[in-house]
Length: 336
Ligand code: NAD
Ligand code: TYD
Image 1 (cartoon, helix red, strand yellow):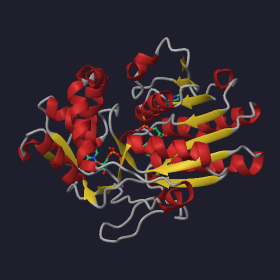
Image 2 (image 1 turned 90 degrees about the vertical axis):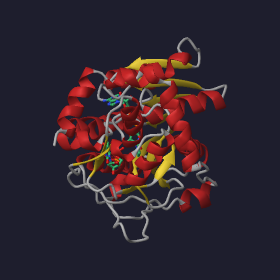
Image 3 (image 1 turned 90 degrees about the horizontal axis):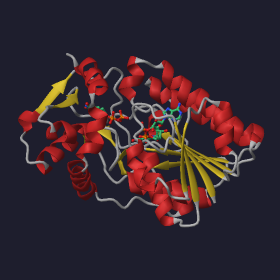
Image 4 (image 1 turned 135 degrees about the vertical axis):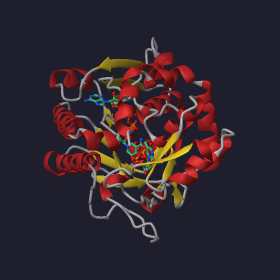
């Protein structure tokens, strides 16, 4: 099987490529990624030179290059996106360009190249926010109510993907997943930011009162879910993929990391809240469980400890991403 992966130099794409090449020894992957600030080719350096892996640097908005990269693809797995909510608040336009227009270019080329399966990676953020107190969860029938430019751009891309199924008969599937954690995540996101700031002797910025809740999904559990959808998913169908945590607040997550790293709570700093900050995400993953037999396995505390260890052991990987440009972004983002 020849697979085109977009955004494979980012967090989940990297983990997916590693997972797939290790599991399916006959398959070949082309990784198509433009390498924005979030892409790090070092993450897959050990596959360079392999006859089963090829990297092409390119923008998903570049029709000619996309068409060339897709030439032999039987399947497309689309991760490429602008992904950071805070950056989408500061500068929304690039989110529309990449997440909406770029996705449309990929879909159009997938139709043209008669790709057998187009899988789109999306997010639970398209469903908006839940109230902190309630027990409700999002599922595949929840109405779309995106509340950040990032979420709105992902919502638009989901609609386009399903429109290409209905209008052009492109065999598509979508997974809407919750917050992933694990190795190779960019240090702008909560868990790696907390770990790497503590390693650098910096404080950990917690937005607002830290009561916001996310549904944490270990990245390897997510890769297994995508695998099943690629193998057994029904064309035109959407699957929600969530983790095993329930109602764990950001503050609790950060405190767990402080404890794992033997730091005290003086390292915490409550900072100005994110505007329009979604209070809570929680996902009901019964469809993918009942139809495809998937369920998350990861114990949060165990995997969090391993994630801390990974960042401890891979300082040169993340230090490269926390250079001058990042410090400039950080100064602007966190100034009070
Ligand atoms: P990431 O930010 O770590 O990586 C994104 C990758 O896409 C980078 O390598 C970047 O260089 C590439 N990219 C960006 N713009 C591009 C363009 N125009 N052309 C080609 N490549 C481009 O993202 P991630 O966390 O790995 O997320 C992957 C996908 O999963 C995204 O679609 C995201 O919306 C979705 N998702 C992520 C999470 C999460 O917790 N990380 C949760 C839900 C959904
Ligand atoms: P993030 O990792 O940016 O993912 P998302 O916004 O897609 O959920 O943030 C996770 C949660 O952590 C979110 O509620 C915002 C919060 N947060 C902080 O409190 N401080 C920070 O410095 C960051 C980056 C996030």
